[in-house]
Length: 220
Ligand code: DX5
Ligand code: ZN
Image (tube, rainbow, N blue to C red; front, side):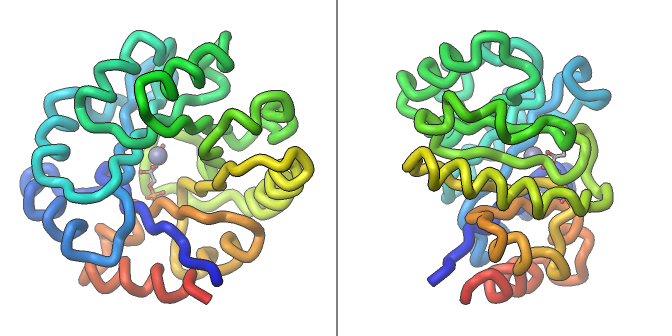
């Protein structure tokens, strides 16, 4: 049975009512908090940093899934551990020594994830997939919420799933960007085990029931 992880992206929350939105996620059927950290260098946008993550962590009662869209993430691995990150995902495109970075994340006791931009083929992970707890496939160009889903993602998920099986790895596939009730089931059928959803959840009339809807669609 598929029991897909639903990870609402806090980037789309109302920052004037951050505690309220964090509590909503606590009470919902969501599994993880997805936290987007952007530095204005790796991506053309700046989201939020350590003080805001600390505030989220104070109230959040679920797994903190931290997605770093920053250059040279090695500088902050320990800081994110101290702020409560359970999963730390770095971008393939931002890491010259990816193997070293992944080992450093694990040495801090966190799960290690690697994110791929839409143009980056999954084959670049061939020699590291066995070390990865998670691969995050970007289904939009990173930097902003609310963009439309890139259809090539399905093919990428299937290729990555084949690579994971071929290598006997234990890696889970997470999808990030433009996830809605329209594409959620097909993504899970292609091999995704975790779905991030920002705008679809927070711009809806009733975010908590939208999370429940995504959970239901992806449990089969
Ligand atoms: C984009 C971020 C995403 C974003 C998703 O760079 O990594 O996590 O918040 O937002 P939606 O679901 O609105 O595409
Ligand atoms: Zn993200």
